[in-house]
Length: 212
Ligand code: PRP
Image: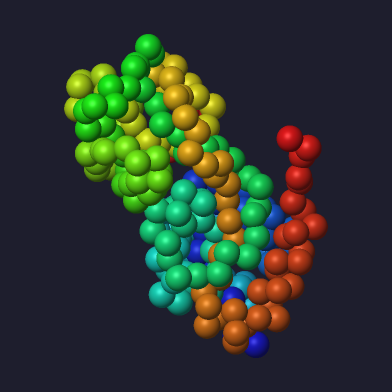
């Protein structure tokens, strides 16, 4: 059997994901040693984990550097990587939304200035609405753009809503709900299908679906 290479998103979501994989029988005790190492393997289970930037997981998986990984639906919608999306893990839940300063009124005669890290999601959304927009692509701290007059609205991730509130912004439209997805490289799915299917089955049993 070959090693199963797993790209995990660095951070709090990644810790949760690893706990699920561990429970699924793909444990790797060395990962818990608290150091700056980024690659860990367990030969007994033939599994190898890498910590990568959450927004890079899909790139590793698409190119086969990782066989599988966990990525946010936001990243999958934005970059449309050529991968299989096998499971909604129902964690890391948030939503993609349009937000604006409180009391904002859209003047439909004018091009709407939209600041975002998610240019493709924003473009798709407004194209479907038939609304003319001007995208201002930023890499972070999107919330300041409308405050400084750089944009009219923002398209960004909203989890608790605290960041918006603290900056006097509010959600005006929800675009799409977001959660963490289990993804696989297409070729790996062929050649390591048995290992991947086993993991998918074990993980499905752990997924909590609440009635909402
Ligand atoms: C996201 C998003 C908001 C924040 C929303 O940023 O861009 O800034 O979370 O969360 P809240 O609704 O709970 O306040 P993230 O922390 O993912 O990092 P970023 O600054 O790189 O966008």
